[in-house]
Image 1: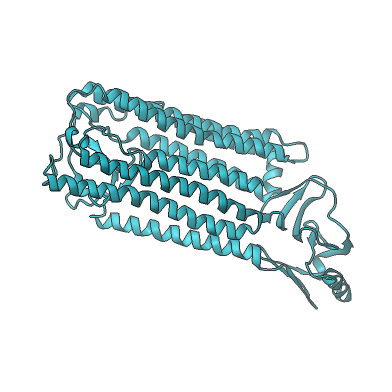
Image 2: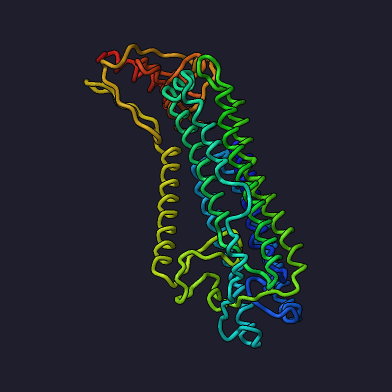
Length: 466
C-alpha cells in the first residue's frame, strides 16, 4: 500500500507539472501564442480560436486518460512490483512523448497557418538587439548561492561524532543516505548559481520593466533554491538527531526524512505558479513590447539554427528549461547521449526488477562450502566462516530495517539491520517455514524455500560437511 501511495503522489505531481507547463499554452502572451509570434488580431481570429479549442479538447482527454491509466497501473504493485515498474516506465515514456508531441503538433500547425496567411515575420527571422542595461545586471538579483556551503557543512558536521561514524561504518544505508543528501544539497547550490547567472530576457523597450521582471524571477528562484537546500539539510539532520545510543534509527525518523525531502517539490510547484502569475501581471503593463521572431528555427518544436553558435538555448515551451541547438554537432551529440543514457538506464532497471521477482532463491551445498543465489544478491560461504546452523519456525521478533535489497509482501532479500539482532542477511519468502539460520561473524543469514522440505534438506547437507 505504501508503494502505491508513494507512486500515486509522484504520478499526480508529474501529470500536474506536465499540464501546467505543456497543457496550458493557449493564452496569447508576449506577442506569442503557443510559441508562435502572431499579431493579437490573428490570435483572436476564428480560425486560430477553433484550433485552440481542438487542442484544448485533445489535451483534456490526453491528461484524463493518463490519470485513469496510471491509477489502474498502480494496482499492479499489489501483484508483482517488477511488472508494475516496467509498465509504469512505459506509461511515463508515453506521457512524456505524448504531451510534447501533442504540443509540438499544434505548434507546427499554427506556424504553417502563420506562413500561409503571411502574418508578421512569417518569411524569416529577425533577431532583436539586446537591452544592454538589462543584460549587464544579470548577476545582481536574489539571495547569494554561498548559503548552500553552510547547508553542506551542516550535513558534514555530524560525521565527526563517534556514534555517527559507527552508524556509517556499520550500515550501508547510512552512507547512501549521507551521500545522497550531500549530492542533492550540492545540486541545489549549483542550480542556484546557474539560475542567477542566466542572461536576462528582454520583453520590452522599457528597460525598467525588463529589469523588474527578471529581478522578480531570480529573486523567487533564489529563495526556492535556498529553501530546498535548507530542508535537504534539515531532513538529514532529523535522521541523525533521532539516532539512539546503539546507532539505531526508527522507521518514524525515515518518514520524517521523506516528508522534509518532499517540501522542495512543493516549493518548485508553488514557485513556478507564482512566477507565472506575477510575470503575467507585470507584462500586462508592457506598452512597448519587443518581438524576437525566430519561429522559423522552432517550427518543428525543437531549435535548429545553424547561424547560432550556442549549444544550449532557452526552451520556447518552458522559460526555465533549456534545450539544445540541433543544427550544431555538439547539440546533436548531447541529444544522442541523453537518449542513449536514458534508454540504457531504463532497460537496466527493468531487467533488474524482473530478476527480483522471477529469479528464485536457491542454495547449493558443496564439499568446500555453500552458495546462495537470488534475484538481487548472491552469497558464498566456506565452512570455516560458519559458526553454527539451525532451523527456526519464524523470524526472531525484532524491528528490521532494510539497508539494501528488496522488501515487499512476497519476499525479503538483501542486508537488514535489526534493533536487537544487528546486521543480518535475508533470503526469505514471506509466509514459508521453517527458516534456516546460518550464523557467521558478520551476523546471521536467514534463508527459506517455497518448496516443502527443502530447508530441512539444506540443513542435513550442511551438517554432513560441516
